Length: 112
Image 1 (cartoon, rainbow, N blue to C red):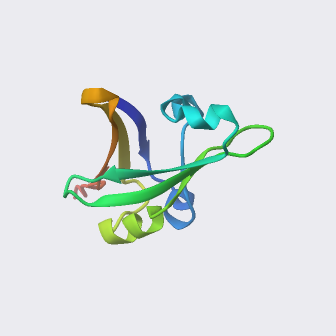
Image 2 (image 1 turned 30 degrees about the vertical axis):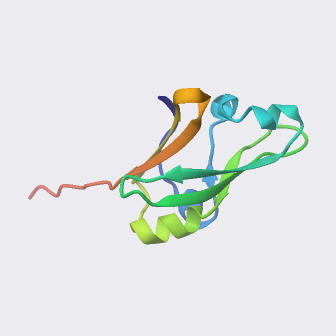
């Protein structure tokens, strides 16, 4: 299993698109072949499949981002700034690739 994203969510991630780390672009080799976007499904811990789209710029810094069902996932999971998202890639039998997405809510403790 390869971890592609493990990040604390920002306001931009929640309102527009999820920033994707450039160092994890290796997981989508088609993007190094001239394509600027790729669609993929990621399964959450409840067994729901999310149709996501990873896009990069065609010139300059690639600045990869995830869109597609991302904002729907944010709404349905009730995500907020400070929560965490983890995207992983697994290669199974026959080199079949699958993606999993997990969210963790930030728990704040108030001490009196």
